[in-house]
Length: 243
Image (cartoon, rainbow, N blue to C red; front, side, top):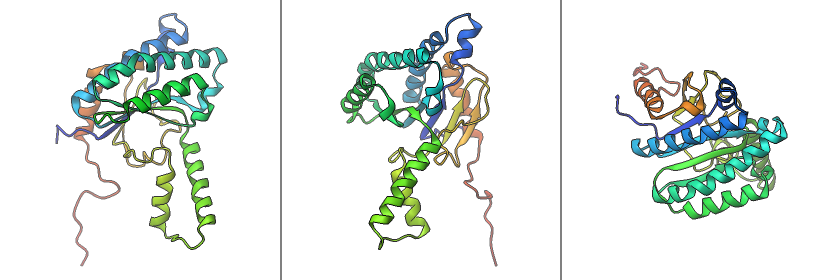
């Protein structure tokens, strides 16, 4: 079915540093250029009727980058939130940040909270930015909460389905459907500790395009590829009769 649109598209935005290096620029210039790709992707997702667009912007491991780059990135994120919030309101976009935000600077947390609150009643596209996020961290913190719940409620049901549902309710992505399509730019073919639980049956699409160059035509190519795939979720795709 060529016109099927994924409900949730997630993107690992990779290649900002290489884009800048190719042009003899500082890495932060690549991150600045990547903001336009974010804007184009949001516009395209709205046009196509995608309900959830999530972007992996800053991983837990990224804290190990040089302090100057991290500091500049945080400032860039604050600026982007300030500049884009009126557009979110105009286009009925709900803004949300997921990750270990306790590690973020207070001024960034304040801007995030303000944008989330202001856009909370918007009913169009939900734009999710993953900041200070790690799939392993997400699983670990959910497991800790499940263990604490079981300790505090010894008479609770502990069958597999109940525990599975409880675990998923404690993931940082609670309330967000699992991604249907994961796009990674820059030619790397791995998911790099991103939504390890949630992406169990996600379709993966890799492109050589560096993130600052990613535009609507590239996004459309990913959607076209997705439309050609048959999602089986572990099944054979054929009806099997057992006598």
